[in-house]
Image (cartoon, rainbow, N blue to C red; front, side, top):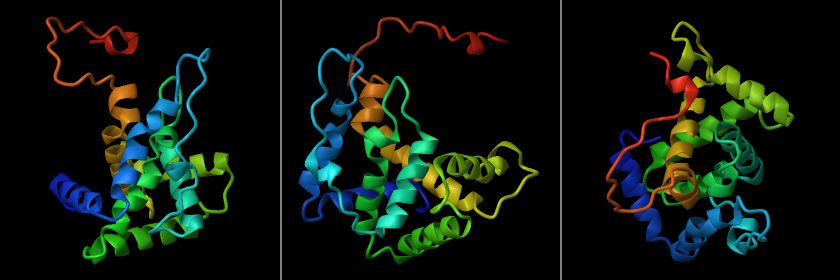
Length: 196
């Protein structure tokens, strides 16, 4: 969508100046609190602004498809996923601020049209997951091609940015604790990372 991360950060700054940005960003940054590991204490209700969100850039069908795509890329497991981080909401919020970046808006409109033509919008969740898997093949095998690979890369990049700048991604998943000092850095204990 944008040439560099700096371009994306500039757009995020522009979006923060939009009317209603404080309400949206406040709700969005608190959203991960809904995902709890401790099932003994009830989770607080989802903020109404996010629960009843009306997309400003995407039409409802495109927004639903984007939301499904983001959740396939970062599913919910023992940590929050794209659903809890409201990645699709954040992407829509940024794009509403991109009025003076027509190339970005055009790119996203074409991307959603490509998804529609690929049958993503009307597909079942299982079929959608298979479509995303096929779209991503060139990422794993450079000899492969897919007409929607650019769409996959666009959504993946924006979804990753949205997720890892959200409370769900940064604090709940990465366990970021701020500017803390670590006296030791324990080794990875995952068996799959122990192979040399």
